Image 1 (cartoon, helix red, strand yellow):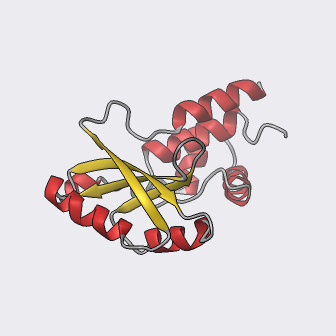
Image 2 (cartoon, helix red, strand yellow):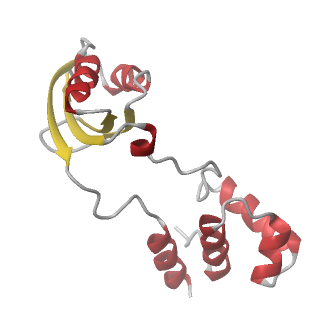
Length: 160
């Protein structure tokens, strides 16, 4: 598979990450390339799925959800992953769910307002017949926040 980005793409992504409200014209000025080049790059990066969105980055703790937990779920195989994922998607506190290898079937990142509220969220998660058991790990502190820019830089270095 060819490298999906080059150095200019990486610079553009970095600029958009630092200043998400910046316009295409200002991007072109700062990157010293034509406006059409920036727009074409953005279109291509979006088409290829490299850029998935432009929405604000939300901090759950600032919304009152100060507890983060990682929950491993074991599911009944006859149900499959899709119905369980649909159930999880209905729970606002479930921020992510991934199919995994190992002793569990799904790994979820969930948030709650407190430890006792975490019990309510876990009870709601477990309220689906296709889920057999869960194992929960509460995060104490975020050491490295979700990030992708180092990965963007590494991918651009591979291209050069």
